[in-house]
Image 1 (cartoon, rainbow, N blue to C red):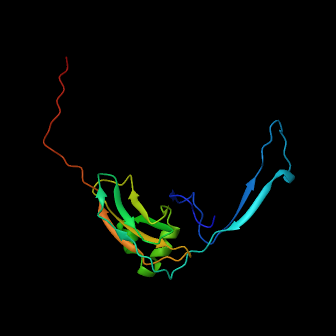
Image 2 (cartoon, rainbow, N blue to C red):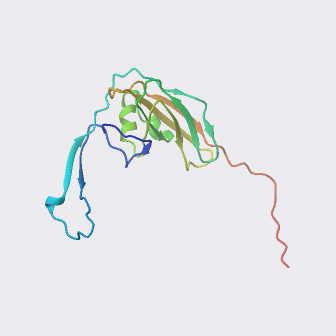
Image 3 (cartoon, one colour):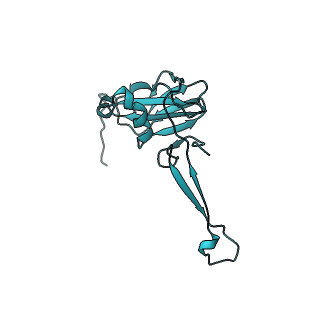
Length: 168
């Protein structure tokens, strides 16, 4: 397959425009020794993802709790949607021309197949602002405009309750 086939996190999907080799050793019942001749391998190269596409991503309202932020995202005509989350310093250090490359190279890049996804980040500290960059890729491997959004996780609220312990 030229593109990742399911929603997945970085480290488990294929990187665009990269050559890979798969190695397979068919296991036979009661066979305990294998030689190099038993190995089947196949080399393949993933398609490039390039600029020049016209797709745009529409984002819904964010949904947050104390540790999670989610944006519903839609892009008509999308084959894939790539997104990644960044803290304030990293987000502000990137110019518009570098955003797509940053998404693709990010350790937290997520790829969703199809035209809709819930772009989500978990395990965020309470009351922390996070920035998301998201782009859609068409059937020709071309991405459109990179959309950005930000949201802040909910804060932990404190109250005047006290705890007392009676020792018997």
